[in-house]
Length: 90
Image 1: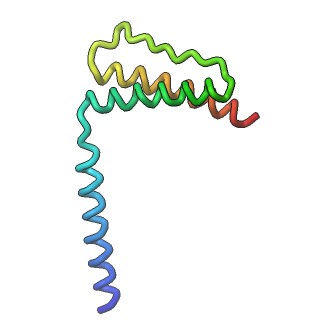
Image 2: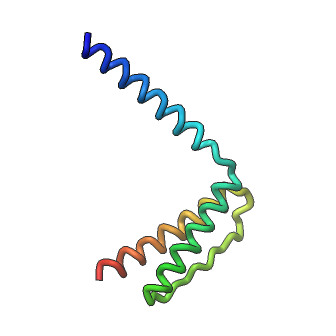
């Protein structure tokens, strides 16, 4: 009986967490774009403060939708993250 209660409690807890996660992942496209842009800017600032030569420019030519623009910022973030990882490894 104790195992059954523990199992039910675990299932209820998992259900609550998954519902909360789904609710919080309901960001709008513009929110994701702003978040991606801010992430690039913050990482670029961090790299500059570490003494790195940083190119944080983002070319949005050809990116017409907010989702496409977000993808460009995510790609730039990945480039800057690789630069940060290399600099941090030294």
